[in-house]
Image (tube, rainbow, N blue to C red; front, side, top):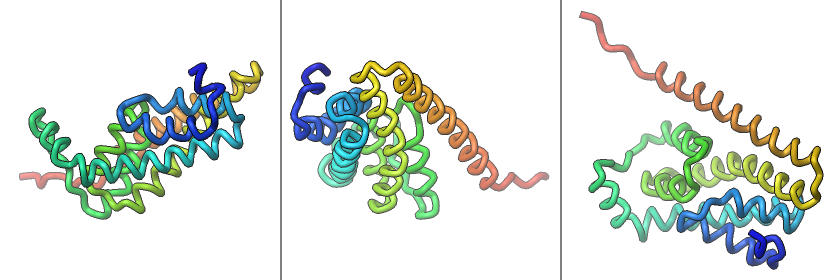
Length: 185
C-alpha cells in the first residue's frame, strides 16, 4: 500500500485492472487511488481500471477459462445457471450488491452465466461506481488526515451497506412473490 500511495497513476490503474482478476481485494487498491490522486482524479482512474477489470474478467471466464472453471465448479457440486433475459438484471444486480463477495468471483460467475455483456457492464459500472467513490474518498481523507472527511467516508460506506441490505431484501421479496404458489388439494 505504501508503494501504491506514491506510485505512478498508470501503475495504480494496472493494479486495479489486473490484480483483482487473480483474487486481490479491490478495496485497498481503490483506497490507494484516493491516497495518491485525491477524490476526483482517483475516482476517474479507479473506475476506468474497474471497467477494464470487468471486461477482462467477463471475457476470460466466458471464453478462455470457461472449461476449467466449469469443471472445477462441477467437481464441487455446483452448476452454472442458465438465465432467461428477464432474470439477468436482478441476477447481475444481486451479485454486484452482495457485500463481501470478491470481485473476481462476481466477474467470473457472471461471465460463466453468459449474461448479456452490455447489461453486465452497465449494471456493474453503476453499482461499483458507488463503492469506488466511497473507497477513493476514504483514501483521500486518510491522506489529508481530515477527521471529518474520514468520518463522512466511513458513514457513506455504512449507509451504502444499509442501502444494499435493503435492496437485497426487496429483491428477495420480489423474487419470492414471482414464484406461484403450489395448488392446494
